[in-house]
Image: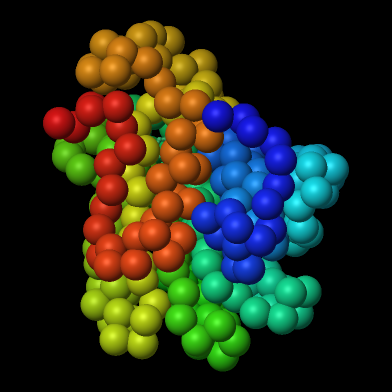
Amino acid sequence: MNNTSTDSTSGLLAGKVAFITGAGRGIGAAAARLFAREGAEVLLAARTEEQLKAVTEEVRAAGGTADYVVCDLADAAGVRAAVDRAVDLYGRLDIAFNNGATIQRPGPMDQLPEAEFDHVCTVNLKSVWVAMVAEVAAIRATAGSGAIVNNSSVGSLRGNPELPVYGATKRAVNSLTESAAVTYGPEGIRVNAIAPGGTLTEMIRTWEAESPGVLDRIKAQTPLRRTADPDEIAEAAAWLLSDRSSFVTGTVLRVDGGARA
Ligand SMILES: NC(=O)c1ccc[n+]([C@@H]2O[C@H](COP(=O)([O-])OP(=O)(O)OC[C@H]3O[C@@H](n4cnc5c(N)ncnc54)[C@H](OP(=O)(O)O)[C@@H]3O)[C@@H](O)[C@H]2O)c1
């Protein structure tokens, strides 16, 4: 799975310029490494510069093309500037993975402070809208056609009493994904979402730290009886962003080890 050689001429994403949010660690970092191995030039975005720098250097050391931009998804102007940076750097934008998001503190909805509700909505939902609008404009102005993948969650697909606002923002992302697919399909811009199940990253470790036992519960409810490696989630995003999925748009693809089957 961790093949480290880079192929910029014949990979799945050869010749494409990719913008990836939340790329400093977890699924986004795995996506940055994978997309670059598959031939894309990648621009990584997140808030923590040391993490972005480390992943960028790793990609470059493996022979790939990467750069990063520090950006807070809660800052709409910053998100637009980050998307534009891809065009400034590489001259075009073909594909985007809107992956960055925050978890809420777990617990019933009556326990969540109003300010945290607003923050989760801004980072997990509004930023996806802001990014998609900027990405569509950049794709239209440069590559002409392209593809966008939004990172949702299986937690969006039914009631989510432990992470109710997180789940609501992700279900709204599914809706925005479908609407964008319908709106931009006629001009050759495909828009899909992935809905990962439990994946071993800092996000789920934070949840486990606050709700001990959640990881074992997730594994028990997953037919494959394990969590995902971030690479396995990145693979689904890569396929949806590649020309190999050329007739797929408006879908929310579960990548969940069968958890919602
Ligand atoms: N792990 C799972 O089990 C799971 C399951 C379903 C869906 N997902 C989804 O997968 C995606 C990636 O999550 P992950 O599991 O890889 O989590 P992670 O390891 O915590 O990574 C999250 C990334 O998003 C960035 N981010 C968070 N808040 C941000 C903000 N305000 N502005 C800019 N960047 C921000 C983080 O960087 P900074 O903190 O440096 O900004 C980091 O790079 C998310 O959309 C998540 O909802 C995860």
